[in-house]
Image (tube, rainbow, N blue to C red; front, side):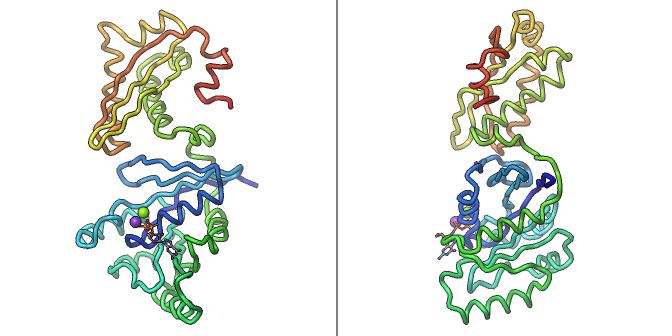
Length: 293
Ligand code: GDP
Ligand code: K
Ligand code: MG
């Protein structure tokens, strides 16, 4: 079977069960790991990896605001929730009326992105209520696929999970599949630094370096990072650092800017360069950098 991968946006009012559903998905597939990463548009909640799929789940920051702020941010949210998504999941709970925004429902109707409407917490309802709710939602959102679930009790969760995979487009994975299962934040930090090195040094250098992020302290307003750039030879160390440290400084400044965007927080990044003669051939080292297990 061809590999599938894509982005799944989860939207819904506060407390309808978005996080619980995520956890239920995690339970379905143990290879998942959540990432607190905050990109400008999406908050990645989790990435579920399978042999032939990668499902990237995120929610939309606008929707987790308190009710009084909700209205103001609604138009932005309506716009962004449908962008860059391959599948849209709209969660409602038994008994609620849904988002108070007609534009949103119009948008669902005209959406090219498939929309799954998950009617959650059905463990709290009886059969009559359930049927009445399914009727209500199928009239309100006729183009959405309705699935009654209990995220808490795991009812119908696996079925929805499989349905999402069916709807994902054929695509290679967007993120490395195994590296992510370890420490996602550090992994992204390393990748961002590596990208700057690729941009600013000639061929041989990027291929002889390995990045290792050691300290990762997340405080309320700032993330403090200490990362080491490992090289194989002393000459490479000199090149990386550059005249009066200018080259390394440029890598640090650019990486920090990207990291701040990525985490949505101020970042303090300390960069060091170390010579580690055989990092490439030494099995223990490879293990440490996550290439083997
Ligand atoms: P979120 O704000 O949308 O992320 O909602 P949460 O996942 O944090 O859930 C809010 C509350 O609803 C929590 O107390 C959950 O335990 C509860 N909850 C979530 N799903 C279900 C469900 O299927 N049944 C019941 N009875 N409670 C649920
Ligand atoms: K909550
Ligand atoms: Mg939540």
